[in-house]
Image 1 (cartoon, rainbow, N blue to C red):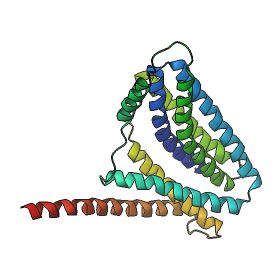
Image 2 (image 1 turned 30 degrees about the vertical axis):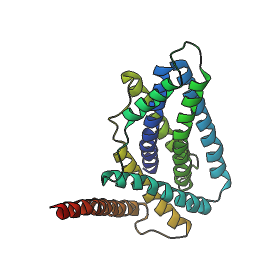
Image 3 (image 1 turned 60 degrees about the vertical axis):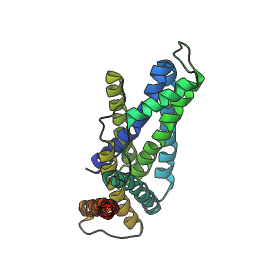
Image 4 (image 1 turned 90 degrees about the vertical axis):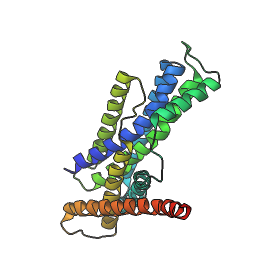
Length: 261
């Protein structure tokens, strides 16, 4: 059961990051050429795979279980709260929604302003831009795979199962984005990024809290089933925050209209 949760969290988190990376890869492909774009993306994917393999294996083999749970649990809380903050601000209207089409047009305009144009040969700038985009977005995916995977692996018989499950979820997300993107050859604007970030933020914060407490020696009532209670608590707090922020943002506007009337 736990491997499925790990794979799902990695899949959802990776899907968001891969959609953002795909936008830049698409820009490079249609503006310069697909050879440069795909070469940079492939090089970044290999780099990320090496990062996961090296650091993931090192953590599982050499770090004691309790220290691993405590350290990774704290990191997951911080990372999950970061995603939750963005989602809550967007739901409350205090932060603009992420617009992949606008990013696509802006990046394409910047490339054209630099004098970049379609060319049959491999263009180093195109390779570098594609590589940087996939690597930067993929680093968050690698973080999810390593931290979430190693914590889950420490609680199972097979220490490699957590990393494998998280990596599988990330790979499936990447393949899905590539296939869909190749079919439509346009920015993936219909992906509910804010909802995905909200769900993953809840999951990461919940598991981070659970594993951090275990690292301090806390024994949860109901054991793993208490994760559902933690998730419900974070959902409730998030809902209350969104409601409060919406009301707070509307209050000054209402007062200003009242003063003008």
